[in-house]
Image (tube, rainbow, N blue to C red; front, side):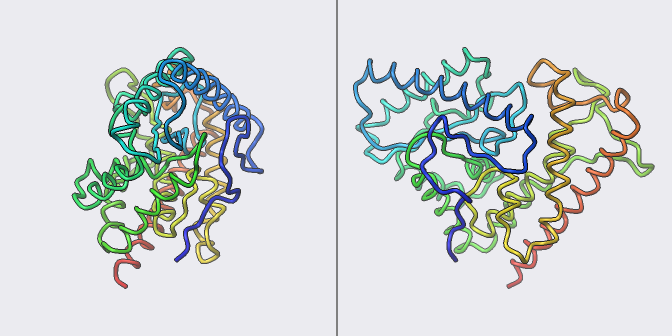
Length: 327
């Protein structure tokens, strides 16, 4: 089966922001603002490292993951990124780790917090030669512990923003190859992302956090977005689609998935409403939470509908995965 590449296949460079036509201008404008800051930080870092260590020793790709990889960032965002290069580790690793650390510092100055989980190009796990990346992915999927599967899924949302895009595509091809060889791998991916927190109780009441800093809130990210994001990632893995943004994954679906594609409008509606809610917040942790009792009745009804549709979508996708296992 041929690998499905993004709708627009090209080497991504700063200043040329990938877009989805139907996105509302507000969401697109926010994405472009993040890309401009990323561009500035990256190029400043690259110039600095060239001064300190000389010219780049090998072709490479700098990529983002997480919400940045999926083009779903909010006003406040942390860092999730990595590097892959075509060269010998002994000769190149120190150079690219230094570049990664300089990128981290520059982004931090722009207001992007360091990733608490260490998913950054300054860390050995996320900065490697193509050969070493292949080996690492192979080990993650062979020793398919919960953590290793989570690392693999994190990488799969990689979106190249500077450099040789094909390097990242080739790594994703390694994942597709492992899926073909190991028929239990898709089930491991599904199990890893299928633990979705409940959004409503038996009486249809919204379930909110009962204690802690965000007591009284529900998680927009986990309770609303994740069923769509995780579900479309699974389909992308199954169908060998290298695009990272969830909306692109929806639109690249083969015709046989018309039932799944029908949920795209719900997901886009949710993204726009999330933007509206987040404009009232000021910190990274706050933008992912909302107080239902402060929302209008119509918004609470929308939340319940989105929760139901998200779970329905994930169940449909899970059945697709199970059907593939039985073949």
